Image 1 (tube, rainbow, N blue to C red):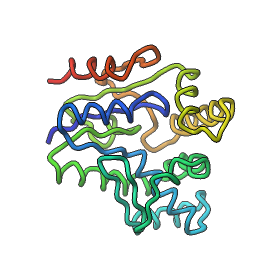
Image 2 (spheres, rainbow, N blue to C red):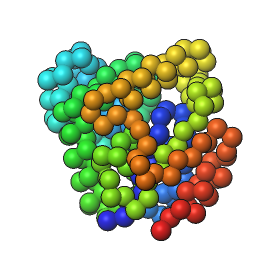
Image 3 (cartoon, helix red, strand yellow):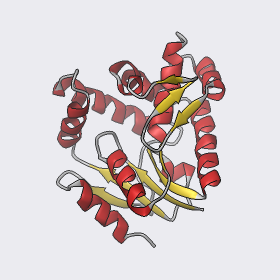
Length: 211
């Protein structure tokens, strides 16, 4: 099974890079962040408090979740592609993602996805460290906070730059500080600062490291 793991914080460019890399290599692509957002969407849609650990864990197991190659996300038969990127889900996703039972369930789904496809390009926050520690290539993308906030504010046009920057800082603290699979680069990952690089330049650097 040939897995390429792309990890990094929000705004580092990992989704765009992973999707572009998958297309060039003609490999399946999975956005695991969309899976956590999907469970968060299901949680909010059912009126459940994201801090309710047991109930959210149950939702993670029960919900029907589909993330396709083009980034379209279906949750319990509902197209949630736009909603999972909205401010309500964004505010709550790090809380849901810190739930150990949620992480366990989604890791199981992610591994099943890769096994059924004999690998692929998988991006997230713990792919190289926890989900696929034997990936053929592990990449960790990062960028300075100002660049990351600028990129994300262009995607979330209804929020100001200051609001987006504050939200990214909060999410970084939650993701890096959680007990279960915190956000960090794997020891054998290729670390790339994307602050001053184009998508094509980043992809080329990744492809140069392919075995």
